[in-house]
Length: 117
Image (cartoon, rainbow, N blue to C red):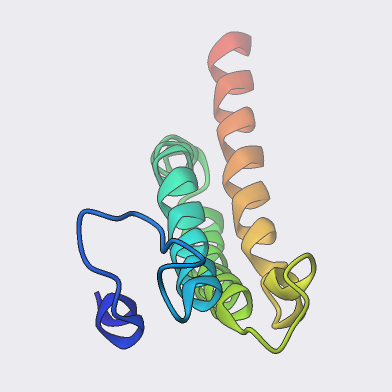
C-alpha cells in the first residue's frame, strides 16, 4: 500500500504503465517482489506444516530464514540502483532458499517415514 501512494499508482492497476506513470519501473519492481512472495508463500506454508510434524525445530528455524530472505529479496528487487537481473540476490536473499530446502527435506523425511512404516 505504501508504494501505491509513493509512486501514485491507483487501483485497479496491478502494475504501472511505463509511459503513463512517472516512476513505473520503480513501482513495478516493488510490485514484482511482493508478487513473488505471494506466489511462493502458500506452497512454503504447506511444506512447513507437514515437515514440522517430523522436524519442528528445523522447520521453525527454516521459517525464520525464509521470512528474512523474503524481505531481503523484496528490498533487493525494489532497489533501482541495482541491475534488475541480479538485484534480488544482492542483499542476501539467498538465505530464503535455505529455509525453503529445510522444509522441503523435512517434508520428504515425513513422506519417507510414512511410506516406510
